[in-house]
Amino acid sequence: MSQSPLISRRKLLAGCAVGSTAMLAWRDQAQAQNEATATPGLPPLKISKVRAIATSPDRVRLVVVKVETSEPGLYGLGCATFNQRPLAVVEAVEKYLDPFARDRSADDIEDMWQNAYTSSYWRNGPVLNNALSGLDMALWDIKGKRAGMPVYQLLGGKCRFAVDLYAHASGREPKEVEDSARSYVEQGFRHVRIQMGSYGSGHLSENPDFRDAGFGLPADDHMDSGPYLKAMPKLFEHIRKALGDKIELLHDVHERVNPIEAIQLVKELEKYRPFFIEDPFAPEQNGYFPILRQQTACPIAMGELFNNPHEWVDLITNRWIDFIRVHLSQIGGLTPARKLAVLAEHFAVRSAWHGPSDVSPVGHACNAHLDLAIHNFGIQEGPRFSDKLKEVFPGCPEIKNGYLHVNEKPGFGVDLNEELAAKYPLPENPGFWTPVRRRDGTAVRP
Image (tube, rainbow, N blue to C red):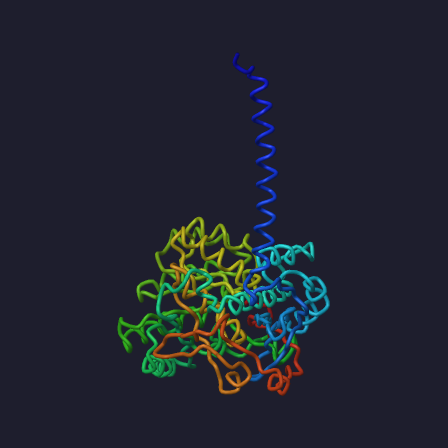
């Protein structure tokens, strides 16, 4: 007589239970064996200390975060430089992130970023983002050192042999700008940003009335939009005639004019075929980008002052900009930046990460490693490494023929000589953006 379906099912379930027990026992035995034979160089790694190191070899307020681990001698470095508020970042790192991060896993970068990001409850402020960036970049540096690879390899490997740069050419009148640009072209640069003096060309404006009236401080800067708006097309015309069409030209408006004035300027400059015009609007005026896109096909770069995704997602997904220009430490480090790069790729937006002098060599190296690994790289703002910086930060990337080259050491490849760094304390001025005013004293937003 055949067995009933109920009896057969009971036997089957019993067999599965025995099989499951055996499988669990085998899994536990295999796990124990794997742990016993694990690579000796990769034990569980814990964070033992997070500290901020402030230094100023070139009179620029740099903040670097050093993350020490439970493995003696293994540490990582990350950039947390916020030139206008360095002391606040140091406080945030040492009083908040250090006790938060201690004894947590140095391996789990994504988990650390997510929890540190929300540990203040309110987030996306520049001070906390820079502090978080220092921790985040340092963990990527550690990851590369443990793997024995440069960070770009952990991101998928190279998409290009080196990082194409643009240089900064400036002068008080067009001929001076031309001479400055020629000097960079002779060094191998193919992209040059042209500015007439400081942002907004304040020297073109007449003596302002607010000074005579005693409004503000005598040291406050002055810039009226009219002289600047008239001078920029003339500057582009001069440089195009002098250098020809083979050199790519860039320009930074730096949010110094009203939105409708910026639209007029970009339309005028389009005929000179700029590589991009940067920051035509302040972040508070993102609503003007669809209007600008309808008016001109001039490539636009934006994002230097951005802090959080709400500021860039719409600009990218609506294709209102062509280059995303964020400051990596300002948005929280490499972890959010690589996600931003992936988002931008799907909408044909290229990278142009912010890379001025107030980024540490560690931060510049992070920029370069990401640049090497993403398909939608556009251009990189060219850094300057003085001899002092190279001594304090051995392993700085090298500039050759207009390209930035990273070394092949594990991690970011940049170290920090703390003894030398201590010889260059921060300037007495703690750091702030000097006010710029119109003729009547109205504040101009950078």
